[in-house]
Length: 294
Length: 268
Image 1 (cartoon, rainbow over the protein chains, first blue to last red):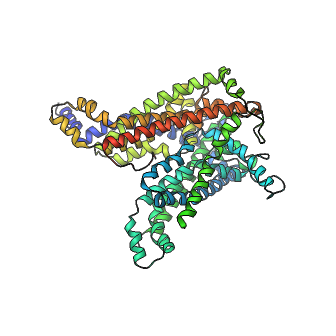
Image 2 (tube, one colour):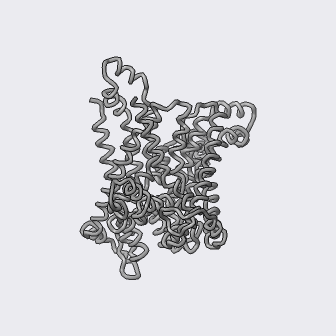
Image 3 (cartoon, chains in turn blue, red):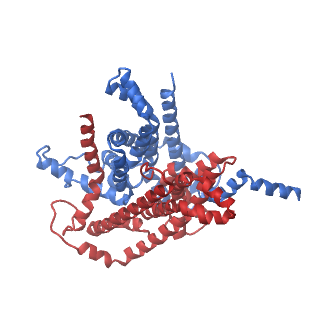
């Protein structure tokens, strides 16, 4: 009796109310995220034995994933492509975020942001496919360059390889990079820039010594937001990558559907998560070290 | 001077962002089966062909059903979590909310295969509902992000005033809180609808024999002769997304005006 009234009292406190209120969403996430993630980790320690799954605990899949040159090269390529995309996207996005934050009138800023985000909300599949059209052998890029006399024959290096994947992903993830950088630039107290100028720094030095360091959190967020999903991208390498641009997600899909080896697919997925996690951690730690007050 | 250079760059960048989308209507109205330049002439044939493809209509209906259900479910779950996170402090709040937001930073392929694996291991058959479950999972974080903004912008003294004036917690929520966050709810519904309608990887892994629109599209991309029809379909989809977004933006701004706040930018 006293126990249940104690419970009732606990439920009337702010903490109790908050926990009750968030529980439907939290339980949903436990069932559909924690349980499935747990199950692929478990599955990755089992092996496929023709049609059945051998449930003895083994590291065989991990051993194979680490030693087979095919898996290694695919994982390495995914990381390389994803890091290149991150670099290109962030470098291209920074000036835009800077322009909207510092050179656009406040009343026009949300219009610019709206213009930047619209393409991102249109069908991803169709956007990726259209890059295949744009970069094609007889596509507009080669056509324009040839008619301008810049090149004599279509460029061989822009479709069905890693470069094409990088261009397409840099396009697809542009808004993800622009928005966090923009937010961190908006937070910069403009009087700090004036102070720097008053103290004798010129415009360029002010940018490098005041604006850029203060924008680092946004740049880091942008880099992580672009890098994490691009490592696991399936559509772009499949449509644009050709044989030289396949990535780990294509292999995971092949393992599960074509080769019917679910444990190996699970192992590669877990391996992918570990790689993504460690790169993200390294990036965060490096930035922290670099920007800590000296 | 520096500002002008940046302005030119910004315009060029917008051209880069819009390049694929501008090509879409060009080929949708082009009277030729090959998706390449030079253009052949003007035609409505590809749009007409859309009307006479039953498989496409089925896929569209599947997608609409999934998107509407996902939007409602994700927004309801988002409402609970956003309200809890903005109004109350409770033990384990940061890890719980962080975990719910996790799908935002998880590659979709991981979400897709982990859901697929658990469904197959449990012996559940794939259906539209498995896709809805996956889509709701990835939409909830977006819904929370939008609704948290609405709840945070709300003046809490309005609710207190309602309680002081004799309203019950439930009627306060219905009469005061709900109308104030309604613009956020509508924006969340529209955003979740748009995300679900366009989502491919999870639908691709979790669809049984009932494809969604993107899964159907994916199948068609292999047939060169079907491509102009896909372009026509793409044109319609882009127009639809833009209309939905402008509507969502309209409600977001109205919400800000109601709360008496300055406009501080877009959704994300």
